[in-house]
Length: 445
Ligand code: FES
Ligand code: FE
Image (tube, rainbow, N blue to C red; front, side, top):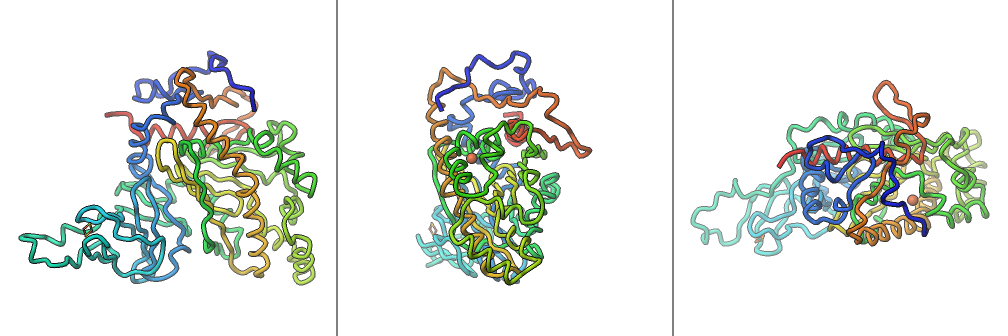
């Protein structure tokens, strides 16, 4: 792409400070945000404290990754190293900072496992998995050590919504269900596609890193404007070799099509691709080519007769892209986690999922579907993230625009719960998550 948005082209009527008087009003306007939000380390450091763990919830893990009593998983909450743990009773969940109370070394160096306690490899202090300090080597060397005050720091609240575990540093945060708000029915739809809602993350993660700010991934997650340009080779291949609707849909203007984006509040948004499809079996029928596709379909149809269309559709993604601010993306059948590493460095991790109560072959074919986009589509997106960060190095060109759809009156409608529905190419997802970003970053100090 060589065409550039002119920095001076924004219609004057659309430019105006949001939240007048806020400390961010110079950097966030109704229709654009300043490059500094993507390049300034001071902003990044503050985001790690306030967006990733301050007032509200951050996605940590899926319950299926903690299958039994004393299971643990090493994750990050912003940059904080955190261990999520299932209690010894096998039910409750909690999280502690993976940070020794002595001289700060991580106490757990494994990604996952089962452990009743963690012994810090540095000087051997031992902590129960609840965080209590229970052992200090050669304790006579301490004149007055109060072990009860030297435990691992705990994440004040950890809560799960139907398997999705979130943590917050705010003891008084609303419940996760309340905070998900209008995103909840979309997550429910995604979970309920699986028989009995049994979704499992039990495959190795697919990790990718890019040299760019974490928000570039969030900007893109709800973006229905880019596919026909950024993913053209994939879309054309899909149309050439299979029955995919991708190119026929995105190749023309998607502005007036049935695919929509929903602004759900609290920074969450979703792209709904389902209206492009038409009834049972159509997710399957319109999928891009997959290895083993024909023999799989033949076997499912032969063995499952009337139930075949449902099973075939379950091998394909849910046809929604749900973005839960700030770090959880539910894409197709997959969970993607955004992990900020530095102001210009991010890790993206895809977790494939399997589901219960279906023939093994359905889960095998789900893996083929789930390899598709990360292999052939995500590299296009990550190239854009890195090229956007490179473009952001020009200090004199200050603004990033998010004004597509703003003021286009016939695109948008609002339902009774305040959800705004609009054309899939509307940049409303950016405008709404920046509202939430500002709220989390606070207006003072
Ligand atoms: Fe953990 Fe010293 S840093 S025991
Ligand atoms: Fe993309």
